[in-house]
Length: 339
Ligand code: SF4
Image 1 (spheres, protein in one colour):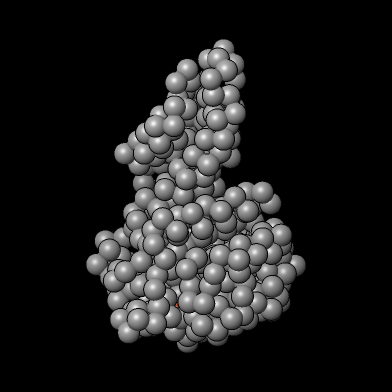
Image 2: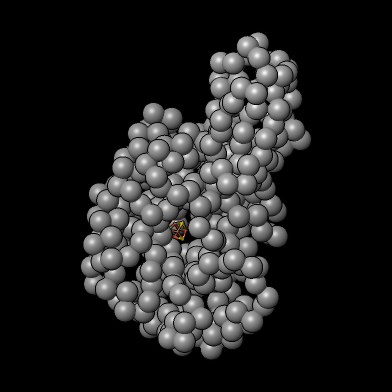
């Protein structure tokens, strides 16, 4: 499936009356907390984005409103933003609008409103499937709100995306993986997994500085995110993002925690290594073999600084093994074949 061209707009902290402990929208979106474009500027920016040369084979075009909580904005502002995309939807140069919001700011009336403006996907900041963790994180909504919101978006005929965080206050692996299983079982259309990092000016920073919060190590966050990705994969839920988007300002705003600009790559490398190792151990010493993986997974198989290959070689698992990268193979899959 070809990837969509996404034209993103960050609405920063606007409209959100909450202050989740991990949140500092300015750092996450890389945008100053100043005003986001008005409808006219937004139209001009979409026009300019559409005029740029596109990579061959790009799929549909989506305008995305990320950051903040879209449906918390005053309705007039929502109309202005959504309205500016309408001419492009009408002429067919934009196919869909997607946006993110909080689970407790979704109901049938809101879904209907969004649908009338051509919104096709609503991403919900679920963050945790534990009420205890949601409370400790100052989210201001419950798991029941999240479940209701997922059902409501789907009942309205829109695609639903879910965002889940690892390493929130009060969380632990058992809760996290059980929650991921429940969430995946609701079969959202897509998912994003973010590690909790301590950002300047966030509630977590204060707790961290007084020793009340300890972020996950990078290794643990990668392992936990990898396990959650496997859970989503097993339910056929597409994970479209692993880790925070690297922006110019984000790095300066990180006080502590498992941030890495190639977090997603680390997770995919860990997951592939966990599959490759037992597959090669099973045939070790019994002849010559080809290890076949997707061509798109070549760097993931090698790992950062060839770490995966070194670990496999140290275990003697690459002796008598040829690496074969196949264009048609599905990412994340592998085959070991005798030659
Ligand atoms: S709901 Fe979203 S925008 Fe609002 S405080 Fe929480 S993370 Fe930040």
